[in-house]
Length: 135
Image (tube, rainbow, N blue to C red):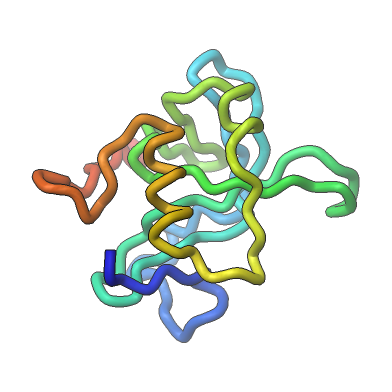
């Protein structure tokens, strides 16, 4: 991985279609349990693609929240107010904690893809997922 992964809010990049901005939407697991909400998007500056959702869970009014990254490969549905993923809540909550002040390095990204069971975007044969957007 030679790409630089950054929070979209820390760049001058914008989404081509503002309706595709999923920040603030609730995230639900494959059983329909709420995992948290999308707090940010981690993008590949070179290819200008979202690679991870920054998901915040727990806490109260932002205090005590835990943030984890979920690969966009986990997304199975994008609704008006929510996102569905193919992982279990417990698995997501148990993911390595994300520190927004640090750059996402290859070792960390590699660990995340392995943790969730996906091929990394720099791996042979990787295809960016097609998303089942709003009907």
